[in-house]
Length: 490
Image 1 (cartoon, one colour):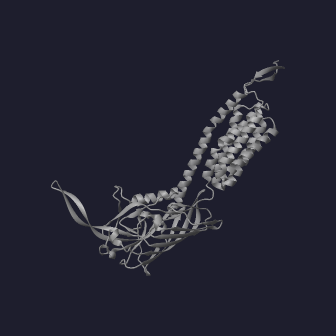
Image 2 (cartoon, helix red, strand yellow):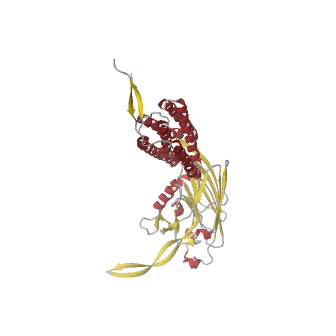
Image 3 (tube, one colour):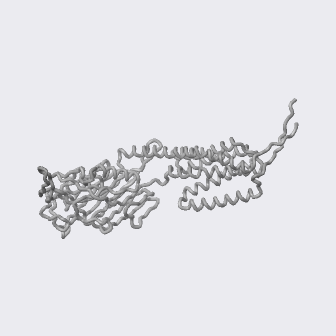
């Protein structure tokens, strides 16, 4: 038996080599990131399938009164090569907004499942009382009373997804119940909703009461219009999100649900009380709601930009849609968006790989343990596998329990493997403690999103300081020699 010397790589070369291995592991991390996106898309498809037979994000608009009127306009025609102007009588529509509108809505949420996916659905009971009155200076708005055709006046109410109108609706004007017909909703709801012919001559003040049940998914919006609009909304759902053009006044949110009250004044809307055009669909910040409302608006509004919609009144006057409505939105969000959290956790994956590889490297350089390339790769594969386990279990048992299960499995696996690679159970326990600290830190960062940058940057600074202290005596350019015993052949 004889001893020979084996030349080892310098610490700087080892550091470069470990960096290259870590860089290679970016590829599987990106594949996991793509997997999260794919599963999220599947979940959205499943939710859309659940909502399809129920109703989508609902946009409530109205009530408004629409009255046809006759007026004259000049038209230019070419006759025998000459331009000829003539005055013709045409029919248009006059839109009257309420002087005041007080709405109350009770939302009863429920969850529906399809396989492992779920969607938040609701039934809502909408009640309201509005008052209408013509402006005293009506002629200044371009219409005289004698031209208004009150025998064809319509009272319109809108709900953007008519599939949700399953319990009927009531319209009461001046104490008289009206005969409700489907369709002809305001343009803000994409023309969806219901209407009734109205017996009113524009004299005095008209009181309108309305009530209807509504089914929808994820959220509900109200389009304020006319004078003062108030909306009282409440639900047993404990995780609402309020957005839109206006926010509620001091909403109350607790574990038992929420209540909110909106008050929108006519000056904040910037809309005249009457006009010759309707307002189009609002922009809904919620992704699903925006898709529903804008698709309905495109079906309702003209493609040629002339603002004449396909919805035509009984006498042939075309709807005119100009501008965009405002909306106030209440979304029923899930308390934990697991795909968002898994996606954010994957972004921290390289830090897990970096800290673990750094610990291995320090045991190699300072402690004398030898770690091969394959061992780095297998350790990195275990760290990447954590995110796959987290995604898979989260869809079944929820994010928190999935995080505990996946992190516990990976910590147990890598601490045992590290003890074998580093030739010491003491070192294996150090790796286990390191991973436990990293997973605990990641869980805190995922739940304290606003403070994640501050906490992360401070801890990175502390980690860098620790590495500098541990390697302060390392000669990065030195080449070590290790004695290796050889057994002589017989």
